[in-house]
Image (cartoon, rainbow, N blue to C red; front, side):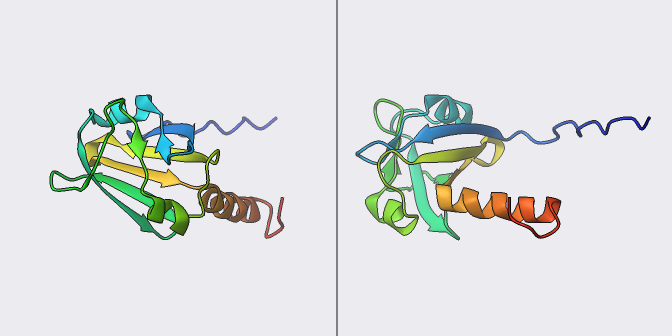
Length: 125
């Protein structure tokens, strides 16, 4: 019998989380914020790029981590990504780069469909 293929060990230092957007556009995943080393008042640059939200540490940034340690996403960015209250997002943090990427459901759908198409020979799951 053939031996099973073992997964490749992780080489990266990314941290992941899942969180819901509240009515005010906040993400309350403090674990990801802690992994990034961002405390209340940390200045950030937030923008939309190709359907995801890119959040970077920026000492000149106009956005900040809230006093409760939450990330508040601006309404315009939420609108551009089609996010509404209750939507769950994938958070992908790179502490070494001071970077957080927020993946909305539409971006996750596109990634999963592409992987499934590749794995299943072009068919959709």
